[in-house]
Amino acid sequence: MKDIEKLAEDALKGDKRSIARLLTVVENGGPEARDAIAILYPETGKAHIIGITGSPGVGKSTLIEKLIREIRKRDKTVGVVAVDPTSPFSGGAFLGDRVRMQSLSTDEGVFIRSMATRGSLGGVARATNDAVKVLDASGMDFIIVETVGAGQSEVEVMRITETVVVMLSPGAGDDIQALKAGMMEIGDVFVVNKADLENAQRVVVDVKNTLSMKEPEEGWKTPIIKTVATTGAGVDELLETIIRHREHLSSSGASEQRKRRVEDEVVSAIREKAADYIIDSLRGSNRLAETIERVMNLEKDPYTAVDELLSKLRIRPKGGRMDDPGLERGLTQVYTGDGKGKTSAAFGLALRAVGRGLRVFVIQFIKGGVDYGELHVVGDLPRFDLVAYGRGQFIDKESPNEEDIAQARRALEHAREILREGEHDVIILDEVNVAITFGLISVEDVLTLIREKPGNVELVLTGRGAPDEIIEAADLVTEMREIKHPFNAGVKARKGIEY
Image 1 (tube, rainbow, N blue to C red):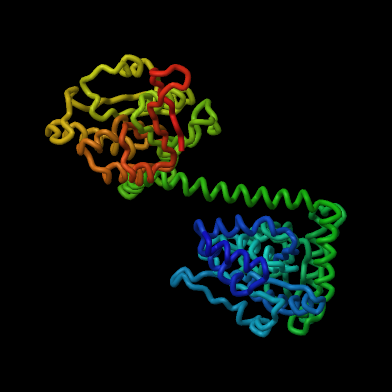
Image 2 (image 1 turned 135 degrees about the vertical axis):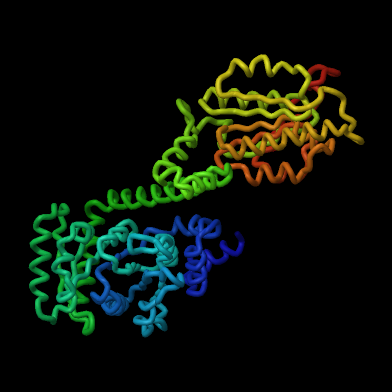
């Protein structure tokens, strides 16, 4: 984290090397990328973000080069994120845009970064949004996002930019392309490039006719600019129009547009996180492998198999809320210490879960054959299962009976099965810490359960003497201690101390 903090600090000062390294971090994704964006985010929101899209060969890179030069004439800084398609065979990308703009690389006020799509749809790389934030926070006045040029799928560019420039040109089938609703609806400014060629005016007329059928944005009449990118003709007019569009947003719907953009960003993050969460849960319970096997054996088609698979997941408790304080899904909790109340606390959590519509399974280590009272209640509760293992006799810590070891291992294997099945939301392993202390099972056995636990399952471990490794692996540890009551000398009390 310290390295990321230093990189972020230097990037905020405009250090190009730090900016480049941060862009690599966000492109690779992962926890470091999230840490970087968390640091930089408060400094974003100042740059004018421009999306430039259009069919391959329309002249986007050439026009952007001229547009950068026009911006620099006005003593403004500019960052460029040029998204290039990834090869489906090698996984590499031909970063041609950087080659075309090489002459600008020595300009201290210009930063150009090519990014591969890595299979991302929508004309922009998956990490493009975060790359824009890095450049924005680093102090760029303008940020240009150039997309791969994939036709209607380019609508994704509007999610991360303020002003979308749609480029067309004569002789490339654009008179047909212009009629495609997706491209027409995202454009704030239209550019007919190669305006010195024959039929350029025809493209202008086609665009005007199509725009006449589009419901106009209040206070903004979508302009059509003619340019010749190779000579720079019309580029100054284009930049003026782009600046005018931002002024329009500032005076009218800027806050509403920003709200839509932030909403899209949050929803996309939720969608990505939810997908990872579900897949991790499925892998942990072995359900994904089983579904793949059934589809491979032609027992089920993929859609039916997935419907059945997802129907068994309990992402949200029936009739309950996920925001219940004291019942956080997916944690590993440990109740330990010499004081009384560990099992009681775990069963209290179990009752709350059942009340929320969740399913609970309790596996008791070394408690089999002894009537502790739980069995009298559990049988009458819905969605609550309990199995106790053990001989119900004294266990010699120094030399445990072979049957004691066998019973504990059966309990451990049962816990593995329950986790693999993925049918329960809360799994309590009562007195499992004691089973470890007595040498009936190993610490590594339990650590493996914790590591392989599906992300949406609450795992609760009880018993005095929890090993340090178990405490370190847990998300929440509650220690029960015996203390002297402060008001009545000689009377013992127990208090739960969380840390």
